[in-house]
Length: 288
Ligand code: G1P
Image (cartoon, rainbow, N blue to C red; front, top):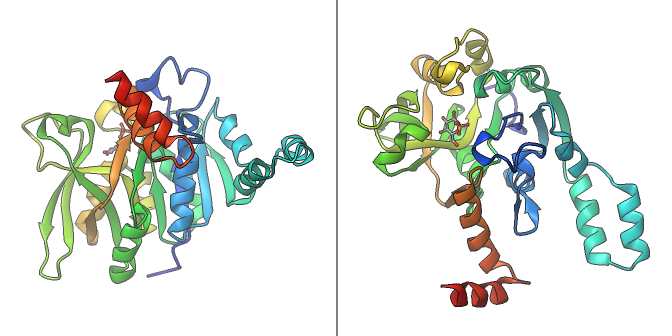
């Protein structure tokens, strides 16, 4: 296999339609769980998984993401002068945590198209893809769980979780086969199948590692479900050519790109927060 795995693509150009009107003028990736935006959780997971070259595929109205990972000289100077050392450290840490390049997806043509926009910056190397609205809290970071199988096999690896059968139409769903070596090989996958027609209840949950061959397949993937160029369609073709493995992610996942998942994430992580957790738990108990 060519190259080491240190690049990761974050598609962040989506319109955030599941969270309107909140996402009309602000990126859904900047929605806050306790005191950090979703995209920062994603970047921290990538860094903890050894992927420190970050490619953000952005679009119109997503400037706040760039500003978040940029140095804010005025803010840093103010915090320093006011003696707010902890905040100063955190703000300057975020601005310097990663090398990020920003690529513009000029038209919202689908997730597959967004990933294809990163090709020039990834080159002929394996790379990760992470969807920041899927927040995954895990002892071993989700991308690291994928990396372990990639390092063992040199192949593409997709993160999976079991979902209730009445929700399969919200996800890419895989057909998997257990191999003698214990790995789960993906034979096929379908984007948002109708309930009752899904090949399984194993859903793709927004964590991927790909070989660069994916780019060639994306280049001639036709619009599929919802008229969009679907990443799942290109990966299904990849799985016909070379082994693609699935990993059942060990961790807690929140679909924080919609109001219910967002509130659940805030409730759960809010209760665990060392500073406000105890007071928040007391409040919640009283509320119930
Ligand atoms: C995308 C993918 C889908 C995957 C999902 C996970 O769908 O196309 O295969 O299961 O992310 O969140 P979206 O939610 O962007 O419609």
